[in-house]
Length: 545
Image (cartoon, rainbow, N blue to C red):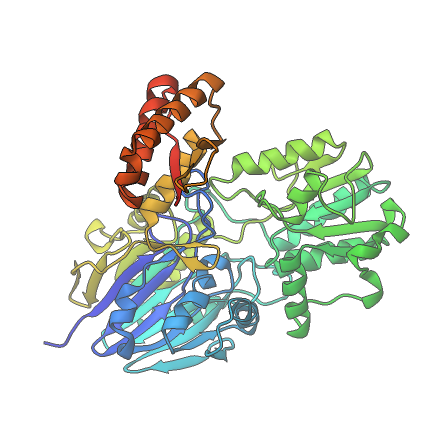
């Protein structure tokens, strides 16, 4: 009996972010997307990136025929700088996605990679499978759904999408081709679940211009600062168009924004008159009401331009009463607190802040319920797996599919690590594959994740105590106690020093040896501080011999 198609979820189900799916038939594997997620600072303090555990791919690297990217957002391409250091396989994506990716690969000093740009309806062979790129609209140009042709039937992955009938660049979701594929027969649909809880249709990106224009009129006597996602080139285009219409100069604030704008201009995805743009360092030459600043920082990122402005730490401008800040974005779940901290700080400095709750200056890039129904009706799949969503969203998408007439036994809600096997005769759960998350501290892999995180949480909660003891014969100074993040009263400090001095005088501490001596000091200090202060700081003994 011929093998079924095997689909393994390495990330992106039961969560938003970290998207990575592995599709396998016989001796051929393709990878769809390789994304990261940004960590929860409370759960993983100090961690920069979280990517999927791709041990399964390393164990099967000879079978991999390519990596196929739906679009250029971080949660779909952010793991590639790490993955491509270990896997020498081609990457297929839109020119914009590849432009953003190549910039990242250079930043991470990845020297060996093979990138292939694709266009609408391109079909890429991948062993006995092939992949067709189907244009969809999303909040970034160059977004694609994927039709994966396998010996057992067609698998359709929507990627992140919406059905926008009036897109900014005139490039509509290719409903004609999607309908054709549906008529030919679809074995399995895997669809974006992000906005399944929202009824109706998503707002067209072109409607955002009207809301922006209204704000430019209302704030004609003020400097206007617009914060948006750096990758949302269509939104950047609309902001520039609006500024030009109102005779304002445009300056870009934020390294990532400037980088993506440069890439988009080179690829002819972004257009503006050169005289409309000014360098952020030269905005002081213009009246405030003649400026529009586009910046990053919609999610309250600590080092973003908008956050730094809110903290009066942005050298080129100081927020004042003559500023109106437009937050042209929605909050990614979990970021609400940091976003409102930025808004509060901007308000304290005199700025008026307009965000989505007050004006339609943002449009989601994800399909709402009626668009999801349309995709389902056009494709008429035999089986369905909702993806790209937290569990509650996947469950609601399952219920939506059942409303469309699909039986519950034909729908599977996956978890990371699940592997399912499918052919026209049925769908079943296979053996799980290694999964989980890989954490990076800066640009370096964290080997002992639990140890690092527990230490950082202990430091945040209980502080750190460093004790320096000198065993040198000529030493005359008593032990030194240095406390950080914890207050040690003077009498407690004296008690600890006295105890340690007694142990040194008796000779027991020196006889114990270096490592045993450190352990003894650690226990002595911990016991005294816990007893007197009810705290458990990280204790670092230092012995000088």
